[in-house]
Image 1: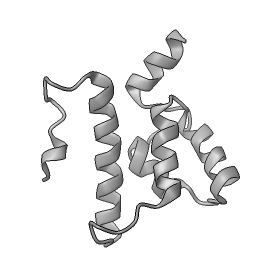
Image 2: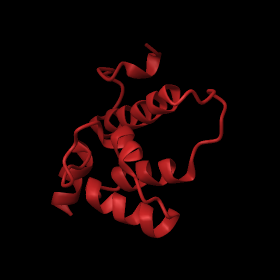
Image 3: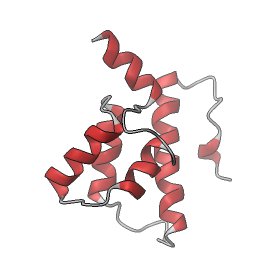
Length: 102
């Protein structure tokens, strides 16, 4: 377990904790794939995190990854960002509240 997995830090806003959780899931997926810690971050993964933080749904992010990066099977990337088993309409929790207020 890394220090990044402590999401109950009172010094972080709920949005910062949500972003940190998405980044940690992405890092865990990279470790699972056996990529070294210093390996270059996949631009599609970075874009998926950006779009999720912006409030897009999992399915919307999948469409953008196909259009922008040619990713035909975004499942592993989306699982890393949104969590395994997340629904097509799922958003990051904090981003969803923010988007609904906009």
